Amino acid sequence: MTDEKDLLYHYTDFGGFSGIVRSRTLWGTDIKYLNDAQELKYSARLMADVLHSLADEMPDPSEEEQKECGGFFTPEGPDHGDPSYLGPKKHALRAAAWSLAALEDESQPQMPHDWKWANGYVTCFTTERDSLGQWRGYAGGDGFAIGFDPAKLSGLTYQCWNYKAGDRIDPSGSGWVDAPIPAPRQISYGDEAQLENLNSVKTAFRAYLSDKPTVINYVSFTTDMFNAAARLCMTLKDGAFRDEKEWRLVAMFAEATPNLRFRKGSYGTGGVVPYIEIGFPREAIAKVVIGPGSAPDLRERAVQQILESNGYLLGEVELERSNVPFRG
View 1 (cartoon, helix red, strand yellow):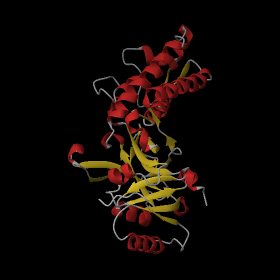
View 2 (cartoon, rainbow, N blue to C red; view 1 turned 90 degrees about the vertical axis):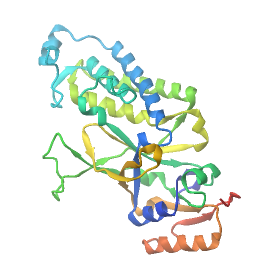
View 3 (cartoon, one colour; view 1 turned 45 degrees about the vertical axis):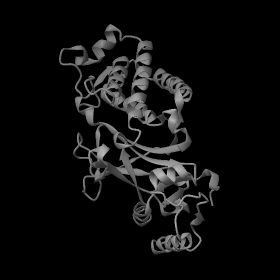
View 4 (cartoon, rainbow, N blue to C red; view 1 turned 135 degrees about the vertical axis):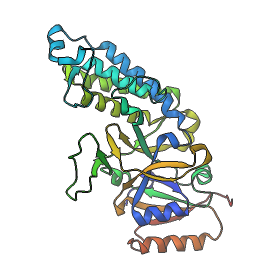
């Protein structure tokens, strides 16, 4: 079994726990609907500044390279519907930076224009297995913390459809294809950690850009830079959330359409929350912590029966009761 200190815990109420075990899926919530949604706007602005700074370092294309770009410098500009369209690397970085800035201010220009709906969907975890704040905030006080083996959360996928390439269908003909999700990433908190993170990102991007020619596939390159930068934005948070010790799975969409679901939300979300479903292997669940509340022995018995009725052998998943003296 994975060392318990390495597990990532997802806090949820009974309905969430039962649904996760039964369906073996997690929900990735539209980041704009989270309780700390403003963090995306703040970090997107910082990351846009990084991309603009890198663009300043890039050389302008020579006359010969401008000719290679075809119609890029004409009044019509680039063909945003053609992923193979050639354009300058410098300008592609600017386009990705503008699109990031538009996550904060939708009046900002974007490339392509329909990126106003580009978004990320996140599933939140923590390394804290018995946290009073998270029992209260995410598990209704008496819910459950599901301990996941992070190694089993690598290589997950989500369903999407590239609406700009309508012939991309899976063998079943349903129209949906599986797209990969990067492994969970640790959140960086506070200005100092964020500055260090951004400097590391800038160094990594600079090395990546140094291997690319001045003229590149403009739309594809911009999409890749936007996706990479936006995904990193979702791992930067205000220091006020430091105690949560959060990790996140992040699915990022720019050109693809996610296979969305919708659930009832709070008043602050307008009453509805978009989300995606992310399947995981059964062996990803390594432990369940039973939250504070009455009749812990009966609740543990029920948890064991839920696990067994969904294919888990007795003792396959470790069970533990919370030590937090909270009774709601």
